[in-house]
Amino acid sequence: MTTIVQILTQIFLRIVKLIFCFAFAPIPLALSVDDEGRGKAIQYFLFVASVGIEAIIIYLATNIYAIGLSGLSSTVNSTDAISTIIAMLFLNGMYLAVIQYGGQFAERLTGGH
Image (cartoon, rainbow, N blue to C red; front, side, top):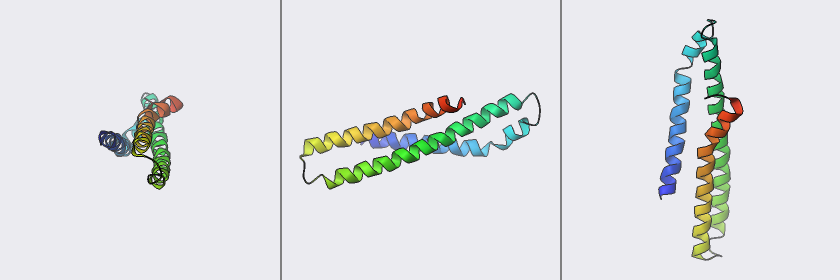
């Protein structure tokens, strides 16, 4: 149960980050006109690009997680409970790791902080 709470918390935090990125987008657009603010505007645009890539990574991870759950639910009747629990814990752990480290990967990829 705690893994599900962690997953939902991570996804909620990413959604809030996306909302704030788009809410404050006019400020860097205005800064990009001036020569002094151009560097900060470029840094913001790289950050927004990393948030977009992070959203794509979360979307792909969610689809892979759904495929894993459907495969796991089809084999529940044919396997014992211990292997099902271990497979579920592994699947939740991998999903949480991809969500948690997807942001760091996206920031390294774009250079936005």
